Image (cartoon, rainbow, N blue to C red; front, side):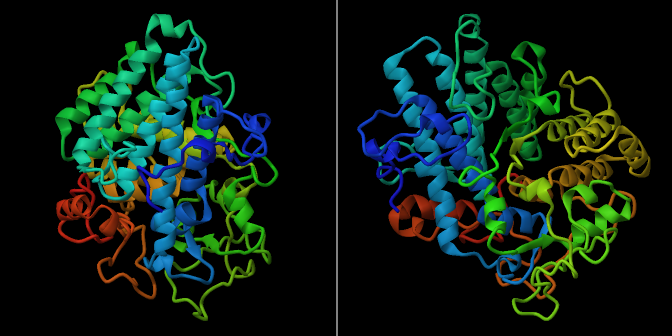
Length: 503
């Protein structure tokens, strides 16, 4: 698929699938001429983004494997880092040719019509574009087509470097927060329909943008602390509208109970059982009697109190594979694979763990509260989201106290709990595993395991540090692709570290 100048245009944009309740009523009859509204385009972009990061391919076989939340029940190549190139190409295309294009088209509709509130609607789409580029840059290690990516007249867009992309994202978020906070815009409407995430609530979009800015800043903090601290200070400045401060503010895509609007993992599980809960994850939760295990996983069918994780990275066809047998291993619960299980983009638990890290680093950014206090709030947010009681939270916190003596110990404490809380968010769980390099904060023992039967990628021994660029890039955009590969060390390898991953 030739992206960028051959993106979806005209009538192709009108072929909308049925999505969620916010835009079921806006489906377009393909047999009648129609003009797509910005609400339809935004809804479709959110749907496509949620599917792209939450499905059985990019979430399950990449993120959930690389974060070692899940193991494979039989077909294990992806858990041993041998990817399917067609899947990788589809992920790349969906981000660019679907999500980003749809958002851009929504903005064009608003810019041309200039109906009251159009500034707010354009800003929301731009914030969503920033999140999309953020995912793309981090998944692929930094360099991606960015500044020129959506220029329909440019078939060979330049790859901006990771630092350039991040600088652009931070600038974009600052600009769009200012738009949404403009007094005249705050009095104007936003999306009346089509916004599945926040129902057009501009105050929540501001909180999300500030929280996303925190994530971006912390991911780059080890290579550009000055810029990261400046961005964190802006996000924490109350004058800028605040950050996500409860689970009610969580940014997520809510699915419905029936196909095609149900969670894509739920749909995948209707026909085959490819995924089990991974042994490293189950064992770590059991180690500290974590009650979230019973929420995240199902017990063995032979013993309602037994939870067994599957060995990670077995060879396909191995006698040790479970083949999905509930008598042998625990399978994922409805917490992740339920029909209505939401696809989370960024939530309150993550924000509190980010605040804990900011405090642990001793940054002068105007943050109230200690690292220990925010660490505890992060765990509480996770327990609340999982439907667990305050008594269970208090008992668990006593087993995993915040006892940091230095930054490395703090990263172990925060990283391990952030990882647990991010269960289901495979891609972000993997990226935080890479950034924080955490281990058991109390024993120093490794949490993650090597693939039991070895890696199938000669450039990767522990875990991929990035996803390789789709192979078509080498022919469709050779000069810019080659420059990007050189910036990554000279090879389009999953073993090349992202620009921000310096430890």
